[in-house]
Length: 157
Image (cartoon, rainbow, N blue to C red; front, side, top):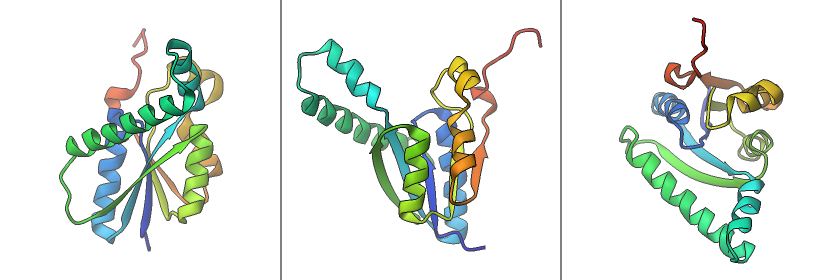
């Protein structure tokens, strides 16, 4: 097995942190490069533009800066690692489409992602999870890392 490039989509949730930790272990084992991807959805800019008079370009700059800060915080709060090469990627668009596109661009050997993220339970019921859509369209194997704490509790159990 030759795993040299691992794509790790993150939304800065605990679930994506678990997927990152899993990928980090693989990267150390196989001497791989990790490509950490955060996808900014277009509606973020639209929503913010309704609450401010700033130009869209200025809003985009602030969101990108916030994303960079979130990357720093995410990595700071993760297991330390000096051995593995880590590339940060930021993309704008629909998450599952951007994840698949980025996996093709970097010729990823594996995608490691959380099975639950920041999206709501109702959205997952109606449209399916991002992880499920990535599994269906990915050009490489996908490891979905579950997190028991992230699974919404169901009443009646």
